[in-house]
Length: 394
Image (cartoon, rainbow, N blue to C red):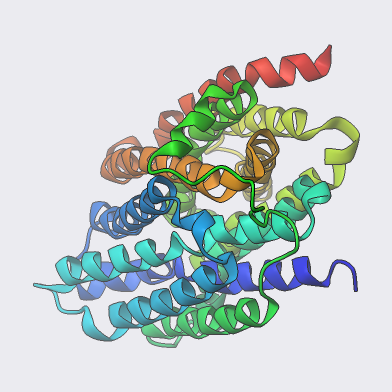
C-alpha cells in the first residue's frame, strides 16, 4: 500500500490529460466537415498550448501553485477542463465559425490543464520525493498515454461521431478530479512556519541555480520537438502510406506511435537509480535526434521497418521529460517546487507553439522532410543539459 498514492495520481494524470489532444483525434472529420486545413488543426493545438502557457505562468509568477493545496487546484482545474472540452464538442461547429469558436474552447482547455499537469508532478513529489525520477516517469508516461487515448478511443469506434472521444475525455477528467480530491496532498513539501514568504515573481530566482538552469535548458530543446511530433503523427502516418501498407487505420497507428512513449518513460524511470536522470535524458535526446535525422530518408523502407522507426521515435521523444522534471524538483528549495515546475512548463510550452505552427504550415510542402525542422530541438537540448550529464560521466 506504500505506493498507492502515486498509483492514484498516475491514473488521475492519465484521465485528466486525455483532454489535451482530444480535438486532434477528430482532425480528419474537422477537415471534411469544417473545411479545415492542417494549419487550422495546428491552430487548435496551439490554442490549447497558449492557454496552458498563460495558466502555468500565472501559477508560477503569483506563487499560487505553492499557496494552496495541490490536490484542490488539480480537482478544480480538471472539472473546468472537462466542461471546456465538452463545450468544444457541443458548441463549436460549422464551416464558418467552427475554427474560430473551437480555438476559444481549446484555449480554455489549455488554461485548465495548467492546474493538472504541473500540480500532478508536485503531488507525486509530495508523496515520494525520494523516488521522484521513477515516480515522475510513470506520471509523464500516463500523460503520454492520455495524449494518445482519444486516438485509441477513435480507433475502437471508427463509426462514432467525432464528438464521442472528446466527450469520453471529459468524463475521464471528472473521474480524475474525484480521485485526487479524495487522495489529498502528501506529507512532504508542506510549508513550515519558518519558511520564507512566497513573493510575486520570486520563482525566477530558480534560474540562478546551475542544475535547475541546465535541466530547464534541456527541457526547452526537448519541447521544440515533442508536441510538434505528436501533432504531426497522424499526418506523417498518412503521407508515408503506412496505414494503407499495413491495413491499419491512421488513428490506430497514431495511438501506437504516441502511446508507446509511456513505455519509454517507464523504462527510463526504471534505470534512473542506476545511471541517473541526466544520462537517461541525454540518451533519449540523442535517440530522438537520430530519428529526426533518419526519418525523411526512410520513406522507401518496407512498412514494418518504417513503423519500427516511428515507434522508436515515439518512445524516445518523451522518455526524457520526467527526468527533466525530477532534476528541476531536486535542484529547487521545497517551498518553490510547484512554481519552479510551472514556470519551466510555461516557457517550454511557449516554445512548442513555434514548432507546431511552423510544422503544420509547412508539412504539405516539405512532406516527410518536416522531421528535419524538429531536429534542432533535441540537439540544443543536449547542449543545454551538457553541464549536468558530462559531470555525471566523470
